[in-house]
Length: 125
Image (cartoon, rainbow, N blue to C red):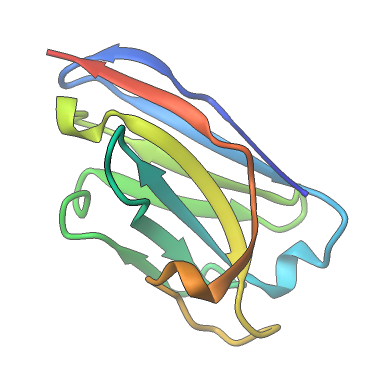
């Protein structure tokens, strides 16, 4: 089970930190990812982190502004979002998947088999 939190309303240029709490699975063995879905659009990849945290991946639209991290002891994954823009407005979802201890990051939705419920991020202009 994945529980995302930390969303809210922020002005352009502001920051938010999303959190995702994992339970019920060997969280620390799997890749974690963040996706987002804006109204009327497809769910899109935002960021991914390997089981150890040694490898990360970002969508071009957020690279340099967002940072993904994880704490395997606490079974948490985070998404620090800085310099937010109105186009970042979406529901953000955390997900986990892939092979145990694969060391890979995955950019496609199909690689993830467990999803959280989403948290709303709204960036006002």
